[in-house]
Image (tube, rainbow, N blue to C red; front, top):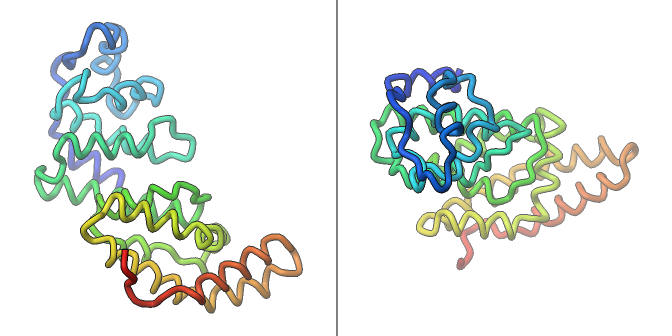
Length: 234
């Protein structure tokens, strides 16, 4: 639903002609395919170089808005070759927070919907990603609300594996959100503290079956239990 709304929200943008491209960097064939192939049919191979070079040596911000729904769709897949961080940086280069409110909302809704699926159904391993999502969506709260460790095995395992990496996770939050980092980090620590009963239940449910994972759960429980509950000097 969020993906369809994203395409609808940006459907007024059209590629009427070939984007301007540096002839030293971009071949004519690479450029022509962007105009010849319908947006929803463009592949990651056809868009990967564009994603990296957009608005610097290939096209302008208007072109980027046309491609954005497909770029987001492809970059958020588990097998993505288009790097999320590169695309997020390009959004900022395009000054996306100056776009109409409906377009910004469509992007944010897409990111939150993707995160909700990702954290519940897939392995979360990109520590820098949460910092970016907070920066782009404006708040950590919807991201934490979407993370329900009691509901799926992946959501629970993502919690267990994330806790020992919390220092790195918080540093990425500081890097991407220097002004509001204390608030977001305090919310994250408070949320983790609320997961202690779930970690306890998970430990007793898992320990007889998976010894290594039971140890990881125990470690996560210990670390979360020791977390400060108030904002610390950052």
